[in-house]
Image 1 (tube, rainbow, N blue to C red):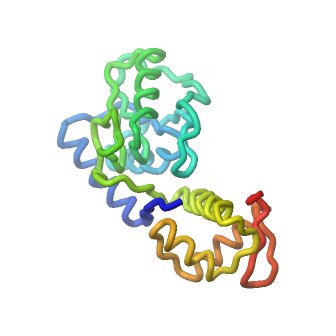
Image 2 (cartoon, helix red, strand yellow):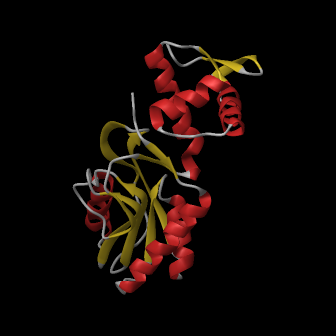
Length: 222
């Protein structure tokens, strides 16, 4: 499976949050409350609180995506219990892929919490696939890619690697092979130290065992 991926560093993610905050200010929309769409929206939402001077931060958990594969329709996992009556709300997520997640979140907040206004904001807006554009975005992505953020790096790369190994019907894999797989399948150039850390993390999560210091046996490819 060939999927083009891009990795967003912590520094770049912070820059994007700053850009996003400027766009929100330029539209003169200063929210009373920021809602982080969990889990991807946690970090951007907290940074936007700082950049916009907002002290009221809550979260809304919606499950939908799993590493470039659509699982099911988005569903609210933990309903809100806060009072948002007559407040300006900003819903924040990391990426708008189809826009379904933000649509579900926005409709839910409007229906259950009776806010004055709800607007949405993301770091990346995938205009080629998003049917429900956000109100604010830091960067438009015109050609579809899978965006890997630093707060979900290991989660994503482990899923991607496991998928590639299943397709190849491989259980034992060297660190050099892992490095090539990420380059060939996902256009990701990873350093040897990064690949080593991925292998270590898989072992710690009991998803793999060491054959030797340069080879792991993955336990989830069957």
